[in-house]
Amino acid sequence: MPFGPQAWKFWLVILFVFVNWGMEARKWQILMKPLQPLSFITAFKSVLCGVTLSLNTPNRMGEYGGRILFVNEGNRLKAITLSIAGGMAQLIITMLMGCFGLLFLLIGKDVSSTLMGVSVFWIKIFLYGSVIGTIVFIFFFFKLGLLIRLLEKLPYANRFSKYINILQTFEAKVLLRLLSISFFRYIVFVLQYIFMLQLLHVEQNMWTGFWIITVMFWILAIIPSFAIAELGIRGTVAKTLFSYSLNTLGILTATFGIWFVNLFIPALIGSLLILGIKIKK
Image 1 (cartoon, rainbow, N blue to C red):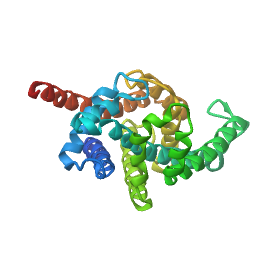
Image 2: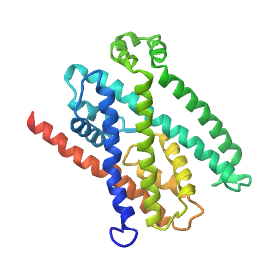
Image 3: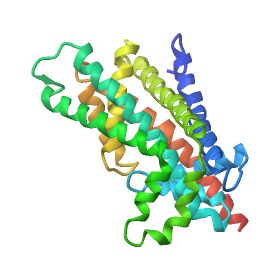
Image 4: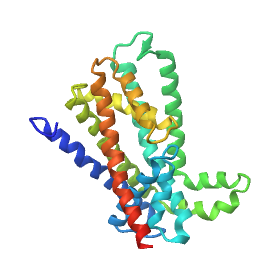
């Protein structure tokens, strides 16, 4: 794959790893600006450390712990709140694109009573639920003040109010900026998958591949898992969605390849950074 007429796709997949996490670092930089301004390099290091600590935690919750390594002691709990807001922006894009992907599967393809072994009825129910969920998330994302007031009504929530009130500092244009970066990062993710699938002769139609992958990302987002165990789940979901292709080995190899370059390599770099922090201390 690294050589030949299609080699540019392979090297683009590798390049996109740094573009992907670079955009995430830019989001982190924007989020941290009202609390503790970070340089882009420091933000990038924070993100990589977050990837490292996320590998062995459910739904990558350890990512928050990794990011705050470069945050001053008194700002760390507030920084975790900001990180959750950034994750919310990425989830909204994943949900929104997943809804469009489900529509493509239901309308753009000839379907009978079942699709990918699942009843079309249940796929439609999932689509309706996804649309409602996306609207609710978008509403609260742009009404963070209202969300904070609702959270403050929960028992014992008042002790955490000083940490979450920082979310009210974000104006709509900043939130839109976070969503736009999340969208372009999402497109990078999808293009990585498409190029890898094409290199392995699984899916040559970019349009079809694009929308199937959006559904895959949405399904993966709602399945609780550890990042390491997620590899098996990714393979199962990918095989189901690309079931019309007989190239099962290609599907699994593409899944592993994307997981490896997007998570394992950045986690390896992040582990070296964490080791450097410990040595310095």
